[in-house]
Amino acid sequence: MDNVEDLKPTNLTKYPGTQLLEEDEVSKILNIAPGTLKNWRKQGKGPIYIKFGSVRYQYSDLLEFIKTSAIKPSSKPSSGGTL
Image (cartoon, rainbow, N blue to C red; front, side, top):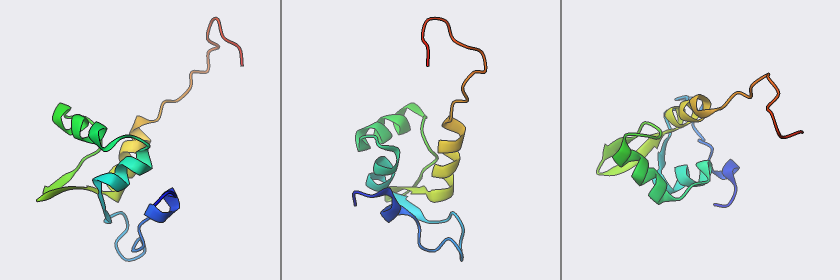
């Protein structure tokens, strides 16, 4: 799966956001190594996860993590650099 579009849940109309994603799927969506997710779990960081034998991430929790991780640019111009 090289395309993030391939990772979109197929059952959103019946159960919105309840799709469970595996660690490798989440790492591809976030463009990080699976080891980073493991480290985040040990540090109490990262998206909420579910562990029943193996680790899974609920699609809606992943979207919330992405949303809350967004950084809003400052309206003030920074000193030094120009755009």
